[in-house]
Each structure stands twice: as C-alpha cells, then as structure tokens.
Amino acid sequence: MAAFDDDDLADTLLKQYSQYNEQDKLEVVHTLATEDGRVYSGVVAAENKRVLKLGVANETEPVTIAKSEIESRKVASVSMMPDGLLDTLNDNEVLDLLSYLKSMRQLE
Image 1: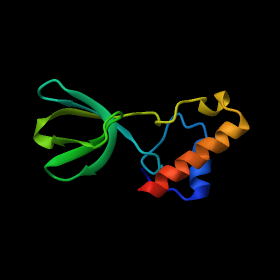
Image 2 (image 1 turned 180 degrees about the vertical axis):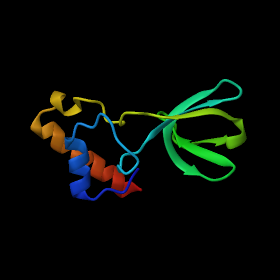
Image 3 (image 1 turned 30 degrees about the vertical axis):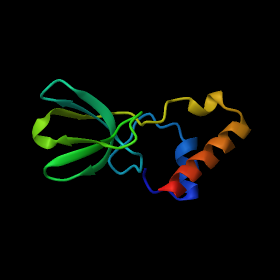
Image 4 (image 1 turned 30 degrees about the horizontal axis):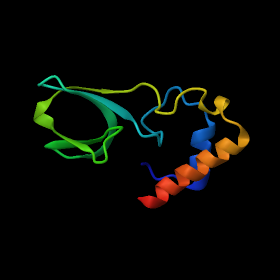
C-alpha cells in the first residue's frame, strides 16, 4: 500500500478519481498475461530485472512471475477506487472506512 499521511488518505478517498497520471500516489493496477495463458491483475509489490511480484486480490502473498514468462503487461487507465464509492455510504460509514484504511496502514 502506498504511504499516505492522514490528509492524503482522506483526500484520496474523497476525490472521485476516474483517471490518473504517473505522478499520482494511487497504486496502479497492472494486468499481466503469461506465455502459458495465465492472467493476473493487481498491484506491483516488488520488481527487479528478473521477477515481478504482484499483489492479487484473494491471495495472502504476492504472486511471483518471472519476467521472461510475461507475454503482455498493461496498466489500467482508471484508479482502483470505483467511481461513486462514497455516494453509497453515509457519513458514519465514510468515517469507518477511513479508520479501517488507517488501521491497515499501521499493520504494515
């Protein structure tokens, strides 16, 4: 997870991101296809010249993929935060979400 201070965290949550650029602090979603037909979508946890570790939903540890096995790699053109997320929450639920996100950051 990206390092956000409290103001950044609230600001990121409150803005309706539909597009971003390289300077944004958002975690960028990558979709990878491997030569053997596997497809992964997630956030890059680590990368070097030989391997890429991708944080994938429903996996407790990042998936490690040899770069030599990657057939294609695409970067998402929208943020991970769904449009209109906060429209479905009341004020207390938004505060609960902020508290939860803060607690997740402190666990790292």
